[in-house]
Length: 182
Image (cartoon, rainbow, N blue to C red; front, top):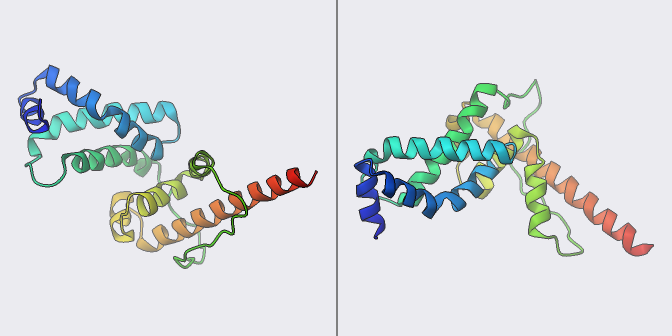
């Protein structure tokens, strides 16, 4: 069945079509949920809540633009709604850091799994902004609206996330170098 037909059936609240759509996209959208959630269980909850929203609002999808992109935006917003209520994004009288690219000199290859685990270990407020800006391409203006924070806070949180990742990667490399010299 074509995606267009599947969407039309979902707009008519066809349960079998909804199940098929869920099976088609749940794995990919779960990966997205993991990026914006504090852990596996929270990601599962966000996926379920996101799909409920997708099915409730699918009649608003007007066949323009990417359907997958439309669903991703709903999933991200679902995950971020929980964090907005927690107000974990504010800064306390800290000078804003510049939005700079941070260079890491890698002596050895770094695994993707290690990098992803480093991102997942970032403090919640830094991880959310990092994922939105670096991995999903949102602007600081868009992030500030999504998270209900100032653009300056978004920029500062991104800079702090980058510094934390740089430190973690450099520490890992120092550990590897120490192990190799033994």
